[in-house]
Figure 1 (cartoon, one colour):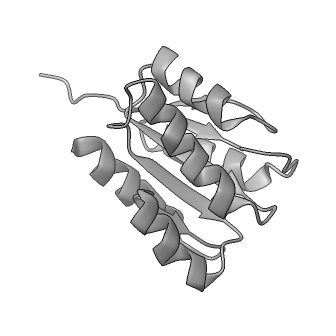
Figure 2 (figure 1 turned 90 degrees about the horizontal axis):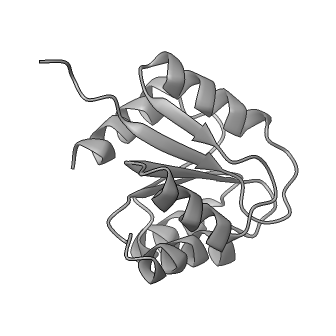
Amino acid sequence: MAEKKYRVLIAKPGLDGHDRGAKCIARALRDAGFEVVYTGIRRSPEEIAVAAVQEDVDAIGLSSLSGAHLQLFPKVLESLEKHDAADIPVIGGGIVPDEDIQILKEKGIQAVFTPGTSMADIIKTFQSVCHK
């Protein structure tokens, strides 16, 4: 029997227009065997949640370089809940100060990656949350 191919959504919430890192993550996940949906830049939390439900994804990866992660990442979780999709795990990444990582995890973000995290660690985390 073939192993399930996990489907993930990579999104850039808010007004952040820098997406090189998100595209690198998307490519690395694709190369690791994931199906990847990339929403592009400047998406609202609601748009991200709706896309995740429509695309029937196993996990969501959010990228923020703008400093709005404490507002935007939890709003994605709220929008998922509103659409009865709170079971979709959300991973965050970008320019996130160390002191904000625990706050995001307490709000429900599964993992948070900062610059310098290896692609292998990111891929392993996506595999782990998709297996649940």
